[in-house]
Length: 133
Image (tube, rainbow, N blue to C red; front, side, top):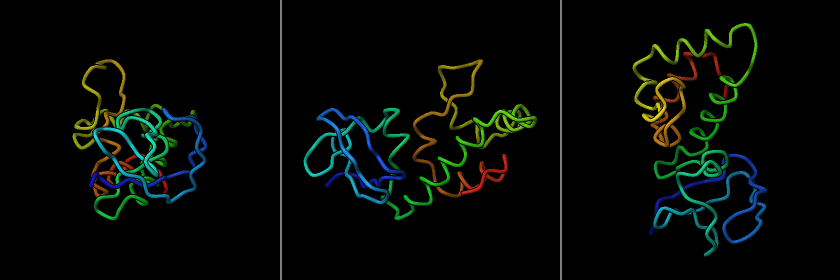
């Protein structure tokens, strides 16, 4: 048995094995670093598609984890007068630093660990930048 994941927002996407249309909350499994649904490979666990559409759910907190990662990334993408201030708080926060992709020194890019982070850490980041689930 692999690790459990759920769809965190409707996944109407092209996958390794063709197009799928998976509704919110659909359970999928990770086997050998790929997300699998009904025996079909969807994408790599660490891929952008996995980060956009799926959330780890081994601990039963996949729905909240998915909502938080979506809210955080959406809030940080918003280009308004507070855009830079939000990013400054992220850069200065030690709790956020452990989820920064190490290969990007001059840009803050979330590492794969962010998308599988404990819900408590994600709540902290969301509160830091004013993101709402």
